[in-house]
Image (tube, rainbow, N blue to C red; front, side, top):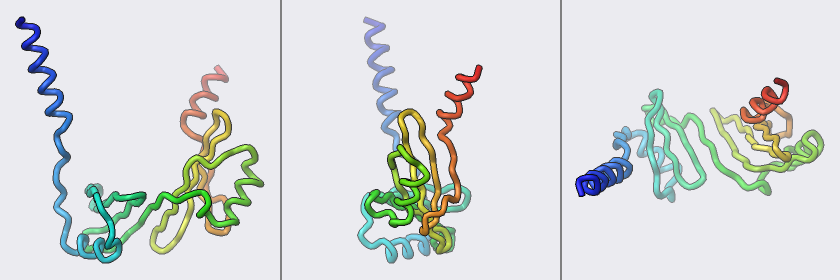
Length: 153
């Protein structure tokens, strides 16, 4: 009986701790005002503070502001069909056999890039493109590197 009571108390403690909400972020008025002006329909917004940047995460968007309310950067999940034609053509030409697993549009100080996760069988790559289809960065997934390293041994 003592074990049962102990298990119930332990289970209840774990459940309460797991449901603990994250600390509330005190978002400066300038950040909140600019966010509401730029994304008036945003709902279920979750705020985080890291490295003096306020990150708002909401429906398929992440946006970062400085403490003065200046929008620093944003990331938007997009559909493959919304990618520029030049990027689709580069994927077909230079990444034969790969499929687009995920696509994000990034805006940083007005500069737009597209980050794609490409998959081919067990291989995955993270590739960054300019809007005109140029490859800016091409990185193999960490798991792929690990698997290749183990295969060599």
